[in-house]
Length: 486
Ligand code: ADP
Image 1 (cartoon, rainbow, N blue to C red):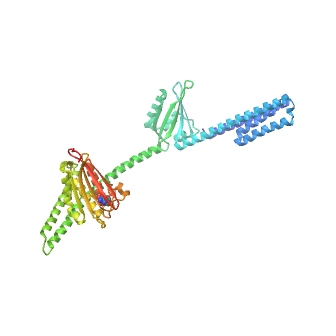
Image 2 (cartoon, helix red, strand yellow):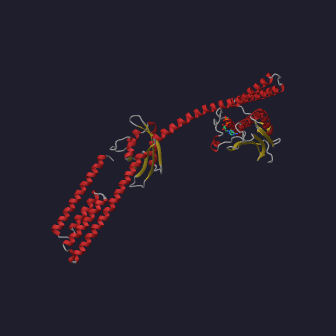
Image 3 (cartoon, rainbow, N blue to C red):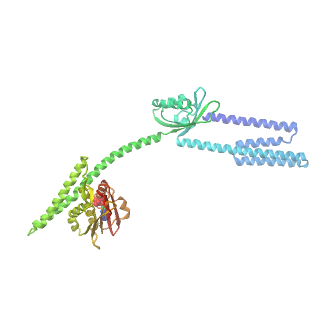
């Protein structure tokens, strides 16, 4: 509703109040002067009460009403109206009338104030939520007339003084979305229970707005169908939806790049370990040969280790090649204990170098698993290297490495337990995350790769650790042919 319209309404109601006051005042005068009725002052007080109910806040209004009652009583006492029965009865009637009317005026004043407050809340909520109300009246000839709230006119960006029409709505609607409006009109004509529509508006400056409308029918009145609806400007949420979609696409791109980075890091990690072993063994071979009396037996052993580790490098590269060709990783039936003991043999040198005492208890005999031998060796070697490194600074107790295999619930289980520094409880959850490391020169890819390999074999890997006591890594993979638990 426009401000001018509201002002005009206020002026009208004020003029009406004054006219009413003049009329009541004249009645009081006539009754007092010509009819000699004792109700004339009461009428005057009633007028006062009514007028103050319109003008003043509740406390002032109550004071006026009480003042009127007091004056009425004072009048009664001064005129000595209590001397006859007629006077007393008239006074009681006037008091009852004035009190009742004051209470009624108070009630209606409270109701009006509550209504005004609710309207203010309603308008505020509409403004905050960018939701306006909209009404449609469809007459017998199926022509539609509209009404809307301030917020709706703001959404359509029409001045509040403009009378809403269907033509105005259509002229703001995006040309491609005009069929949506026709569809809504058709639903009105069919008196559909709930009408929902979403379309775009084009503002005069070319801005696009997205609006959603929901309307339901009101009880039929004089053959007319009336719909009450809500109109919501959803442009902001549409824009954030689009922004989210855009960020998801960017994220997917970054993820792809990150995976490539992860792959590169994992390749470096997997090749680095055997290459380091090749260098160490090569140097020790040179030392054995350069001695005044060359120790050919030791030199030969070093050369064996060089060959074994070089084969590992070439296996890893073969694996990566297979990966890049998207070909399947080997899934051969293997003896689980053989994979474990081969890995131990490969690591013998490292274990001795770190002065670690290994205890192997291989108890799965000829249990078979289906998988990639090289990949599983990578896991075991990685766990042994980590265990040895965790014990490097342990001097006060024996550096022990327990390697145990068993079968449990049709799974081949491997436990690698060390007496190293252990792992703080707060970092346990991040241990298998890519690039998580506590080592100054660590890559933090080892455990993440171990988990991928074990999961690829349909298994699980987990860790138990007590800081300052030691760590136990366990993995379990399904058996190729189920056996009885051992
Ligand atoms: P990196 O060895 O390159 O740090 P890993 O993924 O193999 O990467 O290991 C991640 C982290 O897990 C290590 O930095 C270390 O803090 C911790 N960790 C792994 N194994 C052990 C272990 N046996 N004892 C103590 N900490 C370990």
